[in-house]
Image 1 (cartoon, rainbow, N blue to C red):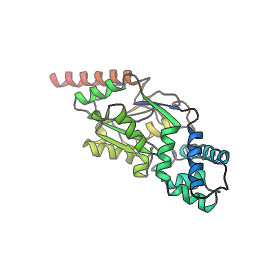
Image 2: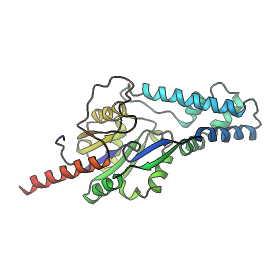
Image 3: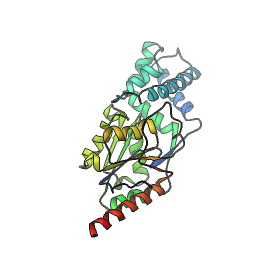
Image 4: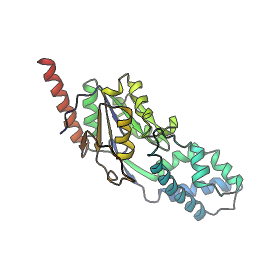
Amino acid sequence: MAELVAPQALLVDFGGVVFTTRKRPGGVAELAREVYDLLVQHGQTELDEPMVLEDIESGLTAWKAWKNAKSRPYAPRDVTHEEFWEDFVAADWPAASRQAVLERAFHLCYRLGILEAERTVRPSAVELLACAHDHGIGVGIVSNALCGQVHREAVEGAGIAKYIGAQIYSDEHLIRKPNPRMLQLAARRLGVAITQCWYVGDNFDRDVLCGRRAGVGGAILMVDQDTYDVPYKVRVEPDLVVQNPGELLAALEQSLRATNSVEVA
């Protein structure tokens, strides 16, 4: 285990660290039905429901490729809700149909987040957050998100908002990891120097790289379902690799014991 100085703030990714995200069967099809009904309400009948579903699925595939590409720039921006629907989903729709989804872009991104995936708190994540809170260590969630409001509601629903001092989501600031400003914003809100923060994420290209660019005191990789599905070579390595929140909790407790021992000595 790497020797890490106990942090003054713990910055964590949403998915892969605090929550596990699983695809919800039929969720995208349910959204396509809602979008189709919206178009019909606006008098737009050029597209049938299967075509709407096909374009949403194609848009999500293109968006995934775009997200991988955006891990290469030093300070990437994020798409707006309107850009997601206009550029990735509805680019070739009739103008009136495009306008109908653009006017509801935030709501549709929110519904996509709700319907597409199920989110559950990872085992020992609550204990990890409680330990940080009990020791006066600020906690911030820093996450790329199409609609951060979905994540905020998940945090509230899980009963862990009391442990979280800052939440930074890419769609709310129009920047995305590995843009180092994401982590710097969280550290600033917590009133802690970035060098006194640990940052924990589950990807090399978005998370470990972001931590290195921002200058965190500890860049930690937590293994989740897509951790080693790296889109291209990333020349950064984490200070520590943990398999789950329980292992991170052990590392945090060890760093606190080591700090206390030094202070007593």
